[in-house]
Amino acid sequence: MKRILFILSFAIAAISAEAQIFPNVQVKTMEGQSVDAATIEHDGPVVVSFWATWCSPCKKELDALAEYYLDLVDETNVKVIAISIDDPRTVQQVINTVNSKAWDYDVYLDTNSDLKRAMGVNNVPHTMVYNSAGELVYTSNKYAPGDEFHLMEVIREAAE
Image (tube, rainbow, N blue to C red; front, side, top):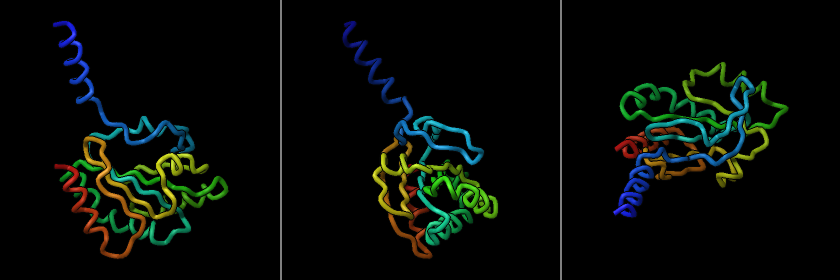
């Protein structure tokens, strides 16, 4: 009986635990603070967008999604996390770009590409959607105008 209770309590704890999307890799906030990516909180679907200041399609995708982001948050509780892969020499350019945009996303800096490598990202733009259980449900490594509408549908499905 004790064994069954132990197994049952372990199963309940595993189900209720928040799924870890990110590996234990250090990234930086826009303010320069180091953060373990594995500790980035979420409680709904998550969009992870790897981007760079020199990548025009990356910025266009993030701009297009920004138009609908707050409505999507209200509707699906989605969290968009933009990960810049710019190197340490261009951090100020990242900050200037983000400050000039109307992005309400959390933006992190992966200046050594540690997170990019750990997550198997080869090029940008690279967008991944995880459902509330932390399961990868969508990935894309391109952007063309209009793709944001498909991405929004994927987010809605991931929220169900």
